[in-house]
Length: 309
Image (cartoon, rainbow, N blue to C red; front, side):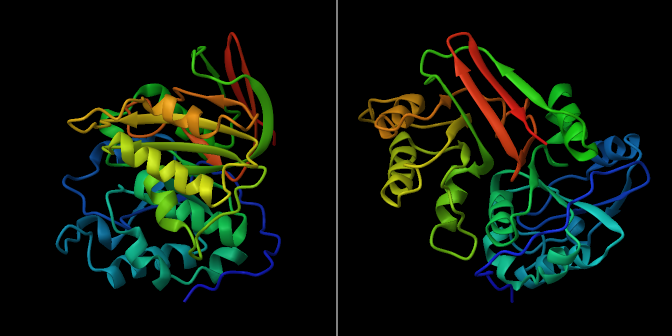
C-alpha cells in the first residue's frame, strides 16, 4: 500500500500541539490489559481532547484486533486532519504485521506527531525513512501509571514545543567528543527487524539512540555486529545508549556488559558515545524527538544533549 519514495519530498512542518487539539490513542500492536484512565486524565489535564480508537478495547489473540483492524484504526487517524497527534497505547509486538496495510499518503500532505517506543520504533523508522518525518520516542498510555514525573513533563514539552535538553552524569565507559546530527533509533531489536525493508533508515551522519529489554547479552552483541557489518555504525555522528533492562546471560557467561559490548564494536570509530540516558523500558523514560537535529557533547564531567531548532 505504502510506496517507499526514491526521492523524499519536503514534508510540511509538523505543528506542535496547543490546548484544545485532539490526540488519538490507538493500538498498533498488542492489546491493552487495563483501561487507560490515568493516561486519559493526564492528557486532558494538558488541555488536549482525547479520541480513542476502536483498538483500545479490541482483542484478537495477543493483539488489539487482527492486522487489518489495527491498520484501519491507524489509517482513520492518519487521514483525519482534525487529529493533531497519534499516541500508541502500548508496544509489545505487532506493528510489523500491519504497517504495510497503511497508506501514508495523507500523512505526507498533513503530517502529525506520532508518539511511542519499543515496538513503535518500526513506525518511527518508517516515517523517517520515507518522509524524513520527526516523531516522539516517549511514554505511552500503558506506561504512564508507573512513569516518573520528569518523563511525563518531557513528553508534555515535546508535544507542545517547549525546549528539551539533558545533562547526564559521567560514565567511565563514555567516549568523549562532540557530534551533531539528526537523531534516529529506538529499540535495537526492532531496528534490526527493519533492516533491508521499506522502513530501513540511512544511518550516515546520524546520532543513533538504542535501548532494549529482555535480551541475552550475546543477542545484543549479534544485533550490533549485524548493524556494523551492514555499514550502519561506521559513519554515525554519535551514539546514545539508553536503558538495557532485564538483560540475561547464559549459563556460561558471555563475558562483557552491554556498555563493553558497544564500545568493543565501535572501538575503531571516533564519534562520541554516552551511556545511561534515561529512556527505554524504565519508569524515567524521558522523551526524545527523533528526526530532529541534536547536539551531543561528552566530556569528563558528563554529557549534554541539546536540540537545535
